View 1: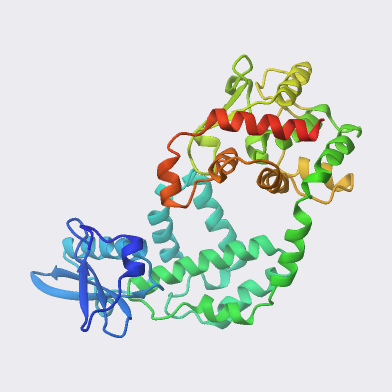
View 2: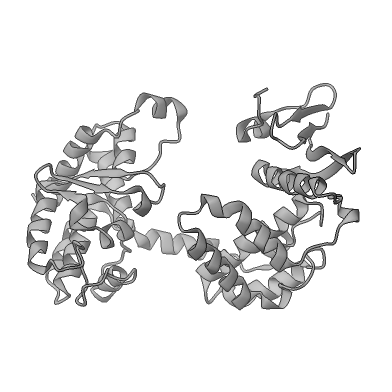
Length: 386
């Protein structure tokens, strides 16, 4: 067993002929995983309360994950250190709002924009689940959750998904802290409309087959849209970058002599710097973009000199009957690369700034494979502009 518990160990550990317990090591605040002979896994915490040893149950795995169990153990240790008793029967049950604050406190350090994301979490739930926010977490039923989510499920799909995920996080932490034994979101999910078929239809329409991408470029180039918008779309396709990365791109990030665009970690989804080799066609886009350069420093400013909005490119495609979304062109590129090149999969994934999941493959490719990706992006440009 590892010195500290890991997600992989907790997931894979199997029961012995008898029950086993595994501690979280030094600094784990007494967190312990109990693996029963029948395979069931439960969290509990060993600590001292008012000088006396005590065990506090934190719920079962996988309903309560390792990070959630650790957060609950830390909070319990803090309560005990301050002279309180963290056992559920000895402390008041928090409201949904109070548990939301605990979730934000736990997760904010992992967010790229903590204040903005926390405000969004609060606003979504205040707008769509306000009736339950001041109720105790142990009072909430699946019916309460259905009442909050059902009005959103068919009309505001993305908002409904966010509200569901955030409420689920609240109740999972409540389970870890011993305030309830079930997650009412799980029961509510079964009563909400099944949108799987609809989601699959949308997903099939989101990306073009790669042999239709050149036609989409020609269609957009022939419109009367603002030059900055058309160039941003062309650059997005040629670099296989995300919409936000392109819309926020600045001249300071570009080395035209080295044919390289370096996106800083603060603008990347994974939080890592990403170097994008620029093909001849991508450099030609930048040459044309010089004609609209302004004091904003943006490669592709809007008419008012601001960053293009997140709906500008989607609207451009929709209004010109291109049946795809901006993000879908990354899928088009990936399909083309898989079928038309002999480069390793890791090179294609690196071009999309994806982290390679396979541990062996990731260990082998320790660089960002820039030169191999340079060849790949030039081949993609040549395919689109023979």
